[in-house]
Structure formats: C-alpha cells, structure tokens
Picture 1 (cartoon, rainbow, N blue to C red):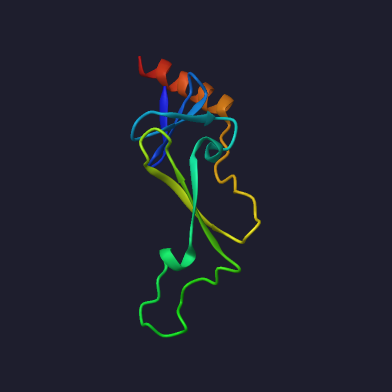
Picture 2: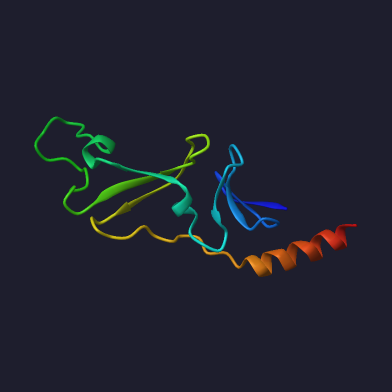
Length: 114
C-alpha cells in the first residue's frame, strides 16, 4: 500500500520505504529522513535570487547567512524538496511518520471496505 505524503513523495507501507511519486524510485527507509536518499545540491543564493534592479542593494538573502539546498530524486531528477538554511546548519528532518500506526490504520480501512 502506497500513501502519497507530499506532491513528489510517497511512502510504501509494505516495504517501509520513501519513494519518488514521479518514478517510484526508493529513496530511504521510511523510519528515517527521506532526504538522506536524495541527490543534494547547494544553489548559490545570487543565482536563485538575482538582483532585479541592477543596484548594489537587493532583496536577495545574504549568502553569509543563508544557503539554498535542493533535494532531487536519484532516479528521475525530480525536485522533491528545497530548504533555506544558515551555513553549517544540518539538513532538517521535516517529516516523521508513525509507520506502525499508518499500517494499522490502513489495514482496518481496507478490511472495512470489503
């Protein structure tokens, strides 16, 4: 049983794996951070937020205080997530699922539907 968690992220309850919704590539154990199974790229802030006026001052984040991290599916290259972090900050764990409870819930729902 696969459950869609975000636009580009599924969890397969049978194998307990995070999967790319676009191609089905298994990313990581569903009881861990899915980002550890992704390709990771740091995008220069100036590239992601170029100045619009040509002036010295812009509304772009200061690269000394902010970095843009992107997470891609290794199977198809789909962007799964991105986050802005201060330099040196570890990658965040933004989704933590109770796999045991999800399995129990979906077994009951499937049994009731029959």
